[in-house]
Length: 240
Image (cartoon, rainbow, N blue to C red; front, top):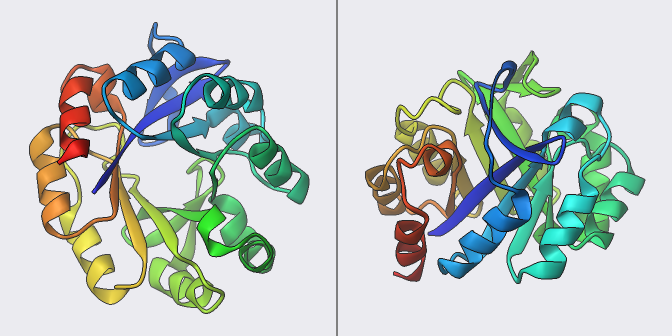
């Protein structure tokens, strides 16, 4: 299982939100490039980079941080937040991202997302599905739709979707453990998908449980910044 340490950005700083709420934000002193270097030094190979300014403003904003990290580390970076146009997507790839996370746009403009899957290839795009009780949320989690996760997954898989990052909003930033049942259901129902779990990881046991059910990956965020999990431990786990 791949460990994806997360860097969430607001104003070029590392932050963490609770349940996606911008009013419940914790800012950390670490600089993004220094965090990325620490991850790499510990033996981690991937990075999940989120432009929260972009998600809120509906336009990619933190591409310069992306450029800096890609220029000064060898991390495999997936980037998300504010990707709404083909120009945004091009900027993300031109700035060095290996993959782009598409969230709200896949819900509001599914046809556009499907055309990108076909044009860029499924290996370049991740559907970042944010869910609450199996219903999809959009626009920095402010809006919960009536759309069911499975309905959209069935549709996108017909267009070649390969990567899914699924965030349980009710768990995100809470450090209360992962929704293992959700990921077990997804893995069993969609065996061809590379599924990454997001939300609630608070200790190594959470990661072992996800690995046991054959999750492709797991995103670890707040647990790192609150010193619940040591970066060195994640690096050792990633080598197993």
